[in-house]
Image (tube, rainbow, N blue to C red; front, side, top):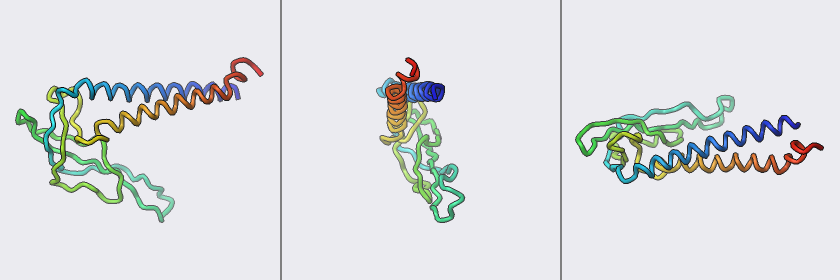
Length: 155
């Protein structure tokens, strides 16, 4: 049991730190470039779909697919650009229509990739990483609090 607890402590701590650092880095990049970001209107030109998230063994479940829009926009300098959104929506059918106008946020210096100008696209994944990191670090702390004395100080 001693080795299992030590492995949990190491794994939870490492995953928690990695998630925390990824979230902080993402937030730092957005906040650092915030004054330079430009907002334009783009157009959905196609929709990419990812693998199904449902169980293939249960025929009664509805297959949910991750849909991500591919957006084309023109920069303030007149350059045409296209990107696939890093975030999308889970649905049975595509919630996006080709030709729909969407707000886009882009960095003229290309230090961060273009993104949909929505709260989740800008902050959601970064905040989820921060919260996930805190959960894993909390799991490591709870594991240490519950078993640390017996593992590190003997029976």
